[in-house]
Image 1: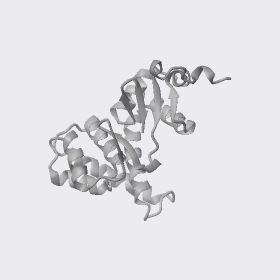
Image 2: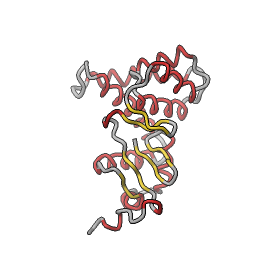
Image 3: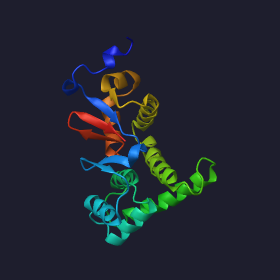
Image 4: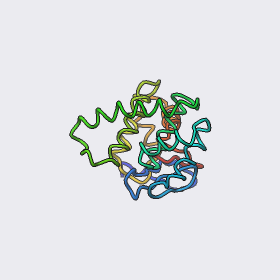
Length: 193
């Protein structure tokens, strides 16, 4: 009863957040299409070049290999690169340098084994993105919102519910998360990666 007001009555009339698990069948929405599994190298390069036009095929391949051709990792990396460095032709190299620094920290922790490359790559891209968001205006609220969404572990969450728990302007926080590909607007809906 306490949450009934937050449950959608009419799907078309509600703006919902749909949670996509980073682990559930390796599924991720990229450019409006659901992608399941890892990219083939040519798909990965094409995806990177479509968003980072000043990146060479060689640079795209290097980024793809570093991120193990994982669509979610590539999506987060590209959004981060565009928001942080722009598309200057050197942006992938700058990102890869950050990856190495964060990866060292992750390897020092006992959270990931050396053979757990999938989890380490995802954790690395999340950590880089999280650090950047935290330093921006509204970033602390955005990170808190991400933490709440992680605990809800639901397929969809009403934005009215989120507005009640978010202390700052929900639209501004969601816009910040959208810039970094944490959420993606899909018509009336927003998808949370």
